[in-house]
Image: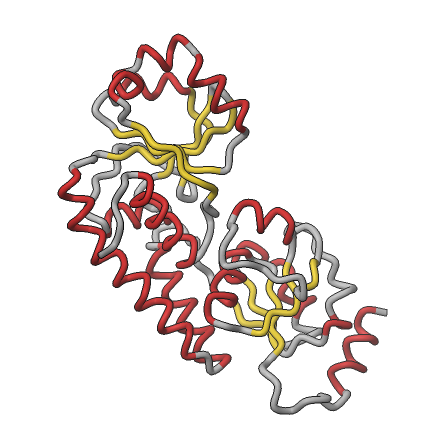
Length: 282
């Protein structure tokens, strides 16, 4: 049924030949990049959660929600008439099914042994070229210009080394290493990442909060999302209040950022870090 519907839709003439290509994706990092580039996105997964975790760029109400990223509703996709589907290595299992609906372009960003920032730039340029969107290149330029502007301001503040973490519950953390998007953002800002241990696919999770006691000189950066109750419970604990960071205020809680995002997430991370430290671009 799915294949028959897809075949009939692909064979039908487009109602508006000059309209922007209709793009769909299963990957949030690519969704961010498409939206920031000005693409005509018609379908993506888990949009309610995307709006809570990634926050920006905003996913408008005109985008159809395909359901869970791990098990998307592909039967709905042919009726949305995408001209192209962008996918990543995270959901490569779906490529043969997606290819029966529309051409698929695979743009991996998180690949072990690679720099996700560089891969995110490559994905943005590929989307811009494929869809003839000059906004993609402008986005890359804007993000890198912002980093270049903020780097000396953050260096002057002298907050490093920084330990970027996400709170799982009141006793466990996910720590982001140098191979994560956050780690690469810190490197480009000239800030040392306090986490020198191994990571698995950009993060080490979970580690107990007792790990914080081994890094008394680190500035702790709590990156949302996390449960408000978990954060408040941790801050009320005797362990937290015994840490030098708690006594000296060497920590910061940011808003939510997609840890497996594209350049828009990198920009949001950099912006929230600077704003949290009271640093504003001139």
